[in-house]
Image (cartoon, rainbow, N blue to C red; front, side, top):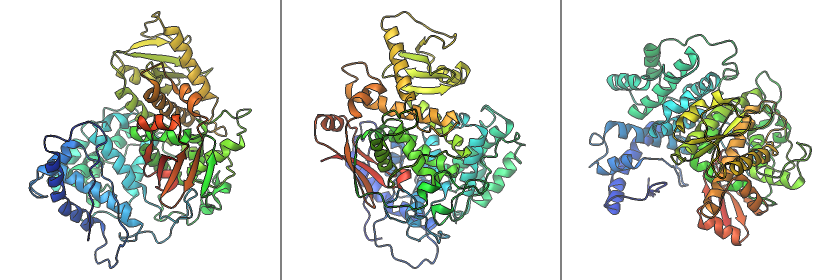
Length: 574
């Protein structure tokens, strides 16, 4: 290694501490040995090759971990073991993804997969294990692992467990310490019986939590044979599953190498994938496309900050739906574009915008998704709801509104009308209502009985605006060809939250805001989309709306967008 550039980027908070320069100097002093250890685990022993292009990796860290790293005189025994292992694991995962594309890691796939949406660039399919572990490590780091796992159903837990255990190219070369492994297993399984659902669901939650904590404490990947043997001894064999409860997750094993072309992709059982016709020939999207609305791109900035995009990427990989990325990306775009005629007929302008957003050449043909798509809804709703609840101001109003005839209830934050959660009835929202126990709850007519306080000035106006928000989002179906409503609800919540965040950030200090306000004022903001091998640039016309978005921090980059083959969305003016 001839040159190493370290960038420390603060994503939240306001202080670097008393000695920012000293903090950076100490971090730089500790990094060489940390990188060396990560490369020693990941690079194939005896590999003879030269990597001439820069290798870029990103490792999220808490300020406490950064401080612990900086305070260590040298990397190793002087750093707290948990911090050292966690950083080594995170760096190892990052290097695995970066070096796999260059063939420097062991058992790298020999074939490449030309994904639709990649501008003529063949990229190697990455196994889902590292991405799944990265997300679970982030949940554990934020103290949310147990709560978010509790919100996942048994089929989702089974799919994520399979991805976490099977989706690796190889185990680590490091030998585990028996005492440390046993301590990590005990910590990871302490709360396994607390979650809802069947006995098997609790067993799966315990396994996922234990494997995450083991990786944090020891740096070992979940596919490590010693870890799996110890975990089997600790938790015992899996309890019997309910009939059909894990059929989606166990539809097919994870392949070492994905199909060499999308035309070989099939659903479980061998039938052609629904969007196979659209992806059979992965044509390069136009280098430059004029789109009628930049809203699909704009909402990705706030959604990425909530962790929604990272969760979507992991959920799609765990459900084995990566060949359906064009359809899923287009569905996200359709939630904020104009309502289709007759509930399904899209305008040519919207089809062009959705194709540019998905990174494919038009025309874009909509189709039904396989049954495994229902595995995406629960994780997306859990992560988004948790993020919005964390941002809820104590004591502020929440609204329990009727989504539509027979379409369940939606919980919205009264400030900005952020949609928090959606369920068939009030019982399905009980846990979310519990987290907002200090809030004043107002009910739409027909929402059912419950703790409520109505009659204050402005309540009727607030209820009317909530009904309008749900009606307008409902007029924009993401997946009109799918009968399964749960994923439609999850995408509606995501789009509504992205729109609400934009409206609240831009105009919240001056007037009441909601998602519809963002649609009314920004839907006509067009852009030029430029695709290249590294990024997708969204160039907005210079004007009042552009400068307003820029001034409020709603532009910039969205890195590693999954349906674009890991490329970056860059929103700029020009």
